[in-house]
Image 1 (cartoon, rainbow, N blue to C red):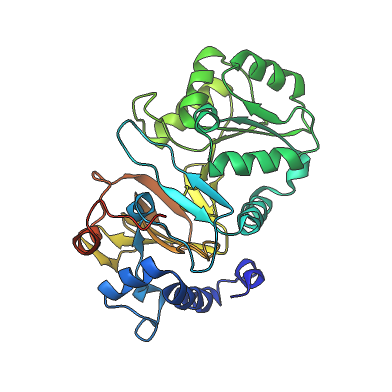
Image 2 (spheres, rainbow, N blue to C red; image 1 turned 45 degrees about the vertical axis):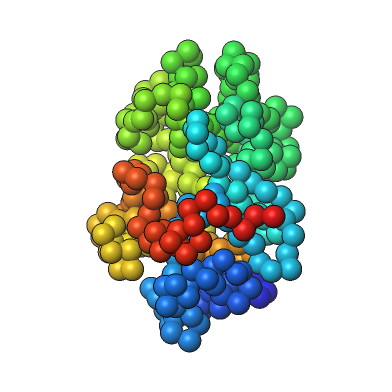
Length: 333
């Protein structure tokens, strides 16, 4: 499989390349092959995107999902709450991830060298092994602004940096985990008009859950900005989608979002809410076809919104695999 062809994909040949990736992963990723066979799916009877089996995201918590013959250059881990198990993404080629998030950022916002990045990601920095921190660190390194960097808990320093660097021609992105941005907004109400405020989602158990609309309204009021941007990504993906307002996301060209019927995961719904399935062609050496536990809606132009999470993190369809492998089994070394 040619990596360059993944990042040159167009709407016209996306399905062709997705089917090629499926055939490769069926052949080279043992756990995914087993899952596909239990779904009675194989390359000979998978003729469209809608035929491809999507792997429930929960298996990244228990299984060593990586192509045969590949070794992990990095292992990204998800954040967890007490008593839960993190997802682990075994990344065979970090250069693919770097290409994916850099090209994705450039398509959405332009050259990262032109930006001053301030990353307010305390919970991610504290636990380590975060794909988001890895991405932010690379963007900061590419920035030509000396003030670019991470902020842990020093809100006073963040306030002073924003005030000192805010200028009409400056391109500034304040990237923050949602709860930390809300904490900062409570302590320092200030005029950040002209600065891009980008939330990554997540209360991480630090605050009561809020709708995205409520979060954006509170941040917009506190910082005097008309819109709040959002980044949609996860440990199990190597690509991101971005929203420039109103919670409407646009994915990178090599990423596609579908919505499945929440009562029949083998069927798809359009123009109504459903469980989010993601094709991420950059996930060449893990699994490019993931059934998430998010609920959303896809629009006719391919943009989408994330409405919330399923009531239970267990996606229907897992039981068949658990029956075969045992709930506590793992193929991790």
